[in-house]
Image (cartoon, rainbow, N blue to C red):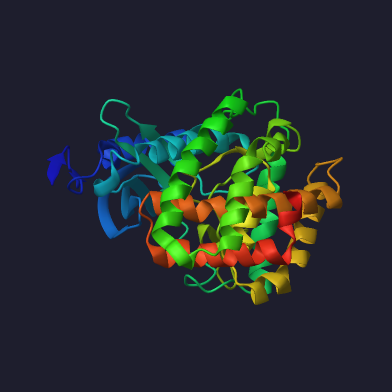
Length: 362
């Protein structure tokens, strides 16, 4: 702690310089939420680690006029154990909040007051709106959400997708299109991972599933044509399970917010829907909600300006995305995600492939 002209300055240890009162003051002024006053004191209210990042809730005190200024903020920085190996996730998330989020309709994602990725040190930070008091996760993982919660989540996802649907900035100012050569290289890498994955599982991976994987690999170039058409595409979240959505608490008149954007990219929109439902939910829950949620998603797209994307095209894309998602457990295994996650994902997505007749696409 130091004193400067009568102002108490508290900088929590091992946190970036952005949490210093002067820098916070500047960030909040740029954000239009602090006028004449200044941040007087910063303190850590709570800290926690996720798999990939470190989350700090900061409490703020002000000197001077600060009506309307936030009393707390969320600071997101790299998890020290993964700071170098997974730095690209931080780079991507900073890019999303600083470049893409300002172009989106308000109220879809937490507001960002500051974000920076340092290429030399590979360190990064995001200073985000704190929604702790107004919003909450729908359920504790791995419990699925209620029907009403799932409807609210899918409605918000559709609004985000609609905002970027066939946007002229795709591949220019927002994201990068993979080339056919990129896709072929990606599948070659996947095939190597799959061979090792299949060897590890032995008789725990049935011959029917092995045939499915081999057919997918063999026909990947044809199946990738949907992506390479560059039509009916959008910015996708990339990790759109329902625990990456914040829902308003009881009595709060506000909308759902989406967070955790370290895997965003340009893709077929149903990639997010298939990941949310086919990958995360067991058949009973998925079958109960799937059709209604796809209907709501399509209705919301139409209400938000998306045209010429039929309900039948949505179903076709969804089935194709479910099929592609059999690759996800293998990728998760390849980066040492625990079996608790990838094994259950494997079982769920394979049941969805069977239910939806996705093998017909091969």
